[in-house]
Image: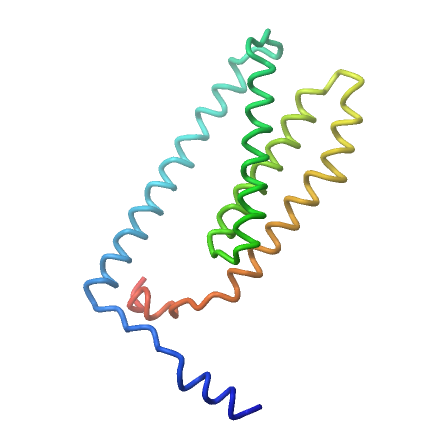
Length: 163
């Protein structure tokens, strides 16, 4: 058995070492992405406060059915994509599972928050607590497990040790 493991190790092709130019481009893209996300997060705070102060607590909605059916179709597509990619053992399953998780969390939030003040709130809360959120967190846990199995360059290699 150890001969088979050693043969597998010998036959495995080592990933090429990135050139300094590639590493610098990766560092620059990483920095720009993090700067963009930081600016967006900071900018979203006053916008959220403005909405909290100015939005009415009640609002007559048009296209209610289209909105919810469209959202659920998006959720079905995300779940089906996750299942299909998982069956095919495609690495893109990570993105699909993460997208499905986010949609499930959003669905739970919208269902419960929009049902406040109605008799439907208990049904929405039960569905969120016993179906949507557990499935979302299960998928997130699975994604984290898959990511931990991936081969990643060391922090010093990818950042040059100076970030």
